[in-house]
Image (cartoon, rainbow, N blue to C red; front, side, top):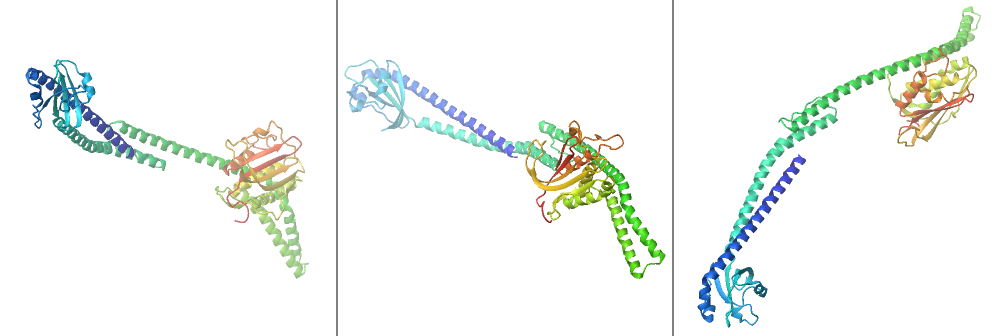
Length: 487
């Protein structure tokens, strides 16, 4: 609607300007025509009375001043400097220099004793002793009245044109353009809000109609594209979740042997204590103590199995406020059986009383990331790897960010003293299905999945490694507003 009003205003200003200029030019043209006609009439009159001018006595002629309202005043004047007061012309003295025989010079004299006059001066042959110029003057009232009438007609025409333009342009501008533009704008806003299927109806058979049709077609194609993208995204997310779950199950398989070894000791304790109770050789106090031992070892075995089941269970991705330090500690405990089997040592080097670090994240997914990194560190040697896990809060920026900005991040570092990684393999570590292990020992998905999970949380992973010098993987996770301390 604003565009329509601007168009109306521009049109009206242009129309009124054109009418005003046209009226001014018409008035000027009419004034010039009247002046020309008046000057020619004065010249004819001067030539007609020339014989009487020569025969009359000068004093008698000077007394012939028939000044009637609306009629011509005839005087005999002289532009000589020694002319008497009653012979001086009404016009300025420089008019005399423009005179020539048998021609008339016309000028407008304002504010004379007779009012505003149109004066013409006609020069005869010089007659000694008498004034030699005939002055004919008449009031400008008739011409001014005509000019006022013309201006009034022009003003009325401008007002009429303005009114008609307002009515016509308002109707056609608002109804045929403004409302249709408003409909197109509303359609654009609704499309921005996600409503792509409600068509816009603009009517008519012009460019705006074509624009509305094109907008409807564009929204239909966008809706189809949006649905396709949603389907592909859903399929991609489903595939990623399947890969992540498969990776978790692979980790569970690796943990199975370690868990079996871990369960062996408490099972032997339970079996031995149960045998003593069955033999009946124990006192009541000893029987009670054996039962308590069996209960404790059973709870220990239940906890180990429950941890393994929780890790293997496929959960729906869900972000909650979680304690990152607790996640790392739980993951480390879960991998202890595998570490013991390979004679590896996993140590959390942070102080026990370090403040907790809170993040808005999916705890299960982050636990999968840490389990992959710790497991790879444990397997960096055939036997006896030393693995350290630490956490700290730092300011960091991703090296591959096009517009890097330093952010507060929690950094989880997993280091080992294993065989290390060749420099040629480092750029490809996070590519799917890339592995440095022998055939059958790895799928090459673990680090790729970990990289994807960390990226979804707004973070990144870096690695430093060299052959026979171990490896250090660092996970950077941006912290929320209340990152440190209790929630």
